Image (tube, rainbow, N blue to C red; front, side, top):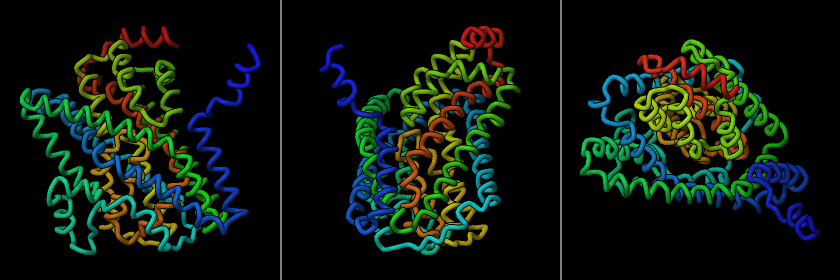
Length: 429
């Protein structure tokens, strides 16, 4: 190898996005400690990153939910398989959400933080746009009415997540009933989804910029104690997701007669891709191909996996539950039972569109906070600083849940070829 090639390989190759985020985090931490007076001068870096996410997230969320409903097939034709899949999805996401809330409460996550909202933080988070009307302003009926947009365009113009979800669900259900007549529209939605997915990936390439500004602001304004508590939040989330994968999903696999360790080895390439990209989108075709090859009936794979990408986001449900309790404790907010119940329902609805796209979780969390008006939405700025790292566990948790779901549904429907499963997994162990 000549000198020019060696120089190019060592010095000109760009580090991975993960490495860039780590470097930006360290620089932001150092800057906030030693140069706190400059924190306000870098606020624009996080503001730009958040605003760019808002620019793309509305149309992308709409397309994802519509395609998820259309891809799930007609409940009338798919019948029992679709119903059982939806029961499993909703049961699992609800249970993990409740468990995460209980665990966060018991651990007192965020109680030692004394966060005080500033006008600058509020302006920064306002770039997410309106996500839901609060119960303070209109009560329960006002909340229901706020989910319905005046026009489809107003929902996108205002960045109102729940209104976009309502319109997307309605559109997806109607397209499902249109059959071949709706095929051109489905193709158009798929093309738009591809476009905005590419835009979102371009935006995510600026994540180091947003993380640098958020980390510097958080360190300068709230000190190292807050950073340690944020690190504790990240650790708590990683441990919870690890326990969920090992004990819950592993337990389901054992109950279905599948060896969890061999199953994990079978998907090791996909696990590595998800870990490094923090999104499971790229491995969707591979998951479906491997599950079918492994011995899960094609009809089960074709329905459960695509639908699971929109409806079976277990790790996101955990994040929403833990994050809201953390922010409530950090801001000294007492949540009444009806507020907590509203938060849980909103989180379950809003999470249906956050299909593994990096950056989407912050928008969904903003929509969830909007339904619990006692918690200052500006406090969300603390979690922006660590969201990229949270996204690693979030992506792998969602990925694992959507790999296991077809096994569970297939066993429930008695559509697993156990002999082929044992043979395939043994060959890859």
